[in-house]
Figure (cartoon, rainbow, N blue to C red):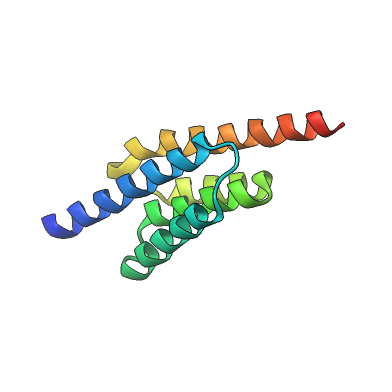
Length: 112
């Protein structure tokens, strides 16, 4: 991978991470923010379909929107296929999924 492509990949990951953290900070995420997040991921995946970070990003958004257990299973599968050189980003994704899971469990308990 060339330096330009590597920089582009890191840039997209940073943009995604910052926007995701901003959305998580809002208790009531704005639909436009979530749409922008999805747009970033789709562009990212279109440019680099094999980029595992883009795949992890899409799994994280799925966790936020739907079934956390399914997202965790997808995450574990993607993590197993991840390149060793990129492992430093895995803990961030893992912590975000755990945070989403805890939030959804708290919401479910509050509804009971």
